[in-house]
Structures are given as C-alpha cells and as structure tokens.
Image (tube, rainbow, N blue to C red; front, side, top):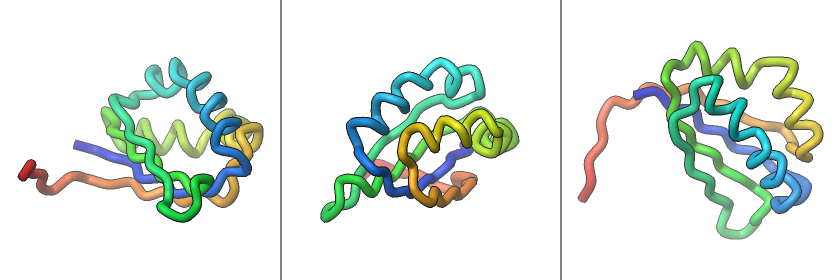
Length: 93
C-alpha cells in the first residue's frame, strides 16, 4: 500500500477543514483511497494528514499541482511537509 504523510500548520483548523472537505471529489478522482486527520497534542492547528493512495505517482501529481498549491493557500496552510511512503508491514494488536 502507498501512503502520504503530511504535517503542516494551519491558520485556523475550522477554516482549513471546510476547504479540505470541499476538495473531497478532487482528492478521490486523483486517487486518494482513505485518510486520517490528527492534530498535535499541544497545538490543534498543527495537523497530521495520513492518506492511502492508489499510487504514489498519482499522489505526487496531485500534491505538487499548481491547483492544489492555490487550494492550500486559500486554506491557510503554513509550510507543508510531505512524505511519500510504501507500507512494509502492518499488524493490529
């Protein structure tokens, strides 16, 4: 499985979440399969977004597109950090 891990600060979580939810269709069309959102224990505007993708090539094309750059700016994203990941093992305990 392929995943993308994004860590970024946002100016306002509620404002960011509205934009994030509004981009559901374009994320799905781009190849996103599922996602999880988390926030830092001490800073609710520091967001961790983990998403599963059909391919890392599709994920890179999506996250590096000019369209998404504009969406991030409108959502108040500050300094996103992207990690493109291949799953090597998983286990539920």
